[in-house]
Length: 610
Image 1 (cartoon, helix red, strand yellow):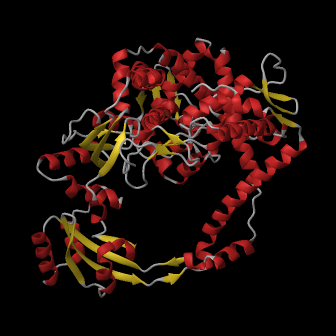
Image 2: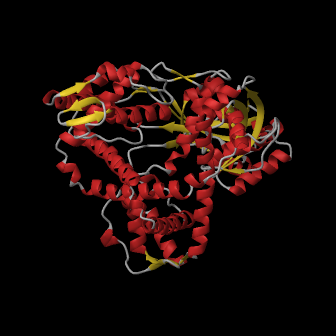
């Protein structure tokens, strides 16, 4: 994307890049106010296998949730407001429609247009059909749905508590708003090095200070080829595009300055700013128009910090102490088959030891079986992270702190406030629709003949290119490489040399063996490796600022993949298509059974606030 350019959404509607970054920043943090187990999926995505490879704060908001937006109500007796649509005995009022559509525009960045207006009212009609009219007894009695409702109640109450006790009490000053305004209209370009922990990060920082370059170190820390080869260069990004902690550090650096290790959501980064680009025309009128949104952004950022401080203080007050033996027992439990069953939500009650204390605090103690039951209520993504004593301690500490916050919320009667009850009901509806869609597609079956027919028609797509099993040694200089080749020629074992000299830490344990790699992955050296006899030493080959010595251990020729090898993948592809069709057909069938009327003129002309 060109510096300062707009961003085009799939609908073809252009969105201001600056405002998109503001929205992304808010959406990045909005998970504090949205139940994790509810339908709104806010995922900050990093490219797989790279830690914070791309570091882009990619915000995925499910279509269902974007259209549900944040709050809604459908009434059967609302006679005081204009009615936009009627579905059987249910009505959608003008104010409900305006609220829903306005929130949708804000959360997605789409500009107001007639197609989006019509799609919104159609989705609201579908929601009434699915949740108010259709038979949902099976879902309402489903054990998983009931458990999810309990979790939503807890999380919405916590979000409401944070809003009342933190968000609403934050003061925002004019100077802060102007600073944010400047930031969201600025882009910087930077590169970074990723480390999983502080020890690795400190080592990388020391090497940089000793004269090593980002280009030299990037191949050692990134699996992503692009970042490994371009010195960790991320390109241009704006305020709200990245992990907040990464961003906070990057925007304070001068051009050419290198940061000390910065703790982020995924590990640690060392950042170097390469360039800055600021919109040269920032008008007072534009600042005033964006003032409300900027204030919301500042409040959310401040609330994140204040929430961390409050929970840390409360954790200290609770004087949480752990029983080391019980902690280790639980970690072992999570690392085995029983842990897999816990993460997947299977029934495990009879397999968990009872009565053994794992945690003690001023609020009481917690036994292993109780701790496991509480962990089972966490989102699956959180459960899956428990792989060490430290992770387990953090999870249990969070559970205890959360329990105390809920008690405080109940003491303040926040659970009885209308706004809380409305939020809770809305998120239950979100989950009801998700369960509904799951129920609709459960019966999706793809005939074997259809899968086979797809395979036959797309056979050319299922060819496995030639693969090579390669062993390599990566070193810093050509002289080092030639010295190692000389040792190999004199009979020194290649594997032993790889373990001793290779800079690739990830393959040192295997003696430099990379496993089978597609021939295309070798780039400019593809022909060199393809024509090399098995076990013949190749090199030295210059790769960026490094030198490689390698040999091909084994070759697998290009071949046609058998139907059995790709059957499952084809089935999933076809299932996705059939699922979408099934949902459309189900909704069409419902709509044909009930009277639906929509005031198209009102939909097209009702004023919308943004």
